[in-house]
Image (cartoon, rainbow, N blue to C red; front, side):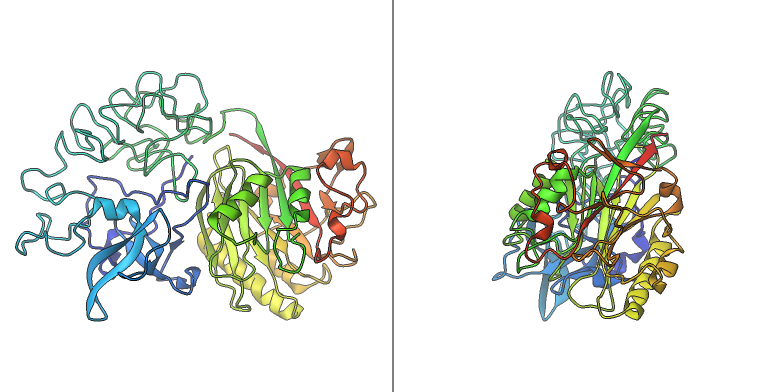
Length: 535
């Protein structure tokens, strides 16, 4: 159930930094994730909330992806600073010269001539638009000879691979490799995504969650934002249940990426039967003087309870470089994915066992040093999980209620009612009677039972007398709530993790008894467990 994202149509291309003729010969691509599972290219919407971008970024529509992403202006003296980005000309005038922005390398490499001209004496490309259409100058959607709708035009970097109508159609970089006879688009045995149609670069490409995952290079079932199970090499019908959608009837037969065995409508990355246990943790458990996780107390607390999804606050670690943040994430769970908001002093974020297929940040108008981080997670089963990580103000209940209202409005406008939703983190609430809970109750369940420690204490601040921290699930997800079981202990409403009172500590190794008492540790971790059907 990797859902194809197409929030922005070609009609808004006039607002873009790149020009691309509207057409359906090739499906839109998706920005690749970082190698460590992080999200570098944040999706945004300039019509609704451009504030998701950092202070030095702009929200610009990129036709190569058919969506808007946050990009940073650059110039000859200002390198992009990331291996995944290049400084590319766009063809538009800016400050008396040609505008340049830091864009994903694949955009720059696929569009060497970013101007409105083809570079051959001023004549335009044969589709009447720019060469920045994801293809070569003579391989676009135009009507002239050599366009890429033919049998030997390539949708990837490999030789003679074809996104058109020929018999050996390849959507990946390899030469005429396909998702054929025994290529599984999910965890089921020997289900087939079609004989001559390639969903990826190799002979055994799997759109499922296993070790041989990937349904292609730029568009796959893999670990990045906005990725999905398809948009394969079929013309209008890909790996989905309908034309141009995903994970159903694609180029194969009735036993391909269909409805019961793989990345299909009813099972997604899971199986057609059974359940998935999901442990969700709210964690504002930084320590020391820097509001970060460098001292290691909070990392041990997360490791000790083995969460699947962490709604983390004060998401800082060492230099905050990609390498350092990846070290923190991999300490929580090797190979886990993450999203960390940008431009924040004490950022919120989400860490996930499963791929994050979409993510971003919603503007918190009440505070300047963080926003609300959100991620759409591709959990097993037909529904996605939307996780919202928040850190509300300490200034008063009125400000917190205003923030709650903002979050509810964002959710109502962007989160599908059919998906699961969880809001969690440090709400800084002094009591459970605060108006913020009545506001949140419009989208999530705020009533008991509440998480508690071994002594039955449900409060979560350092002095254990106020309910600061919460994991709040919507009704769809909350119906599958189950007891949190760790070793011989069972907590019916979930666990308030306080190492000072938890016994036996051996059950939550490597946690040490003094971790929750560390200098700068102001909150306890909160855990809730759910058992979600895969069908």
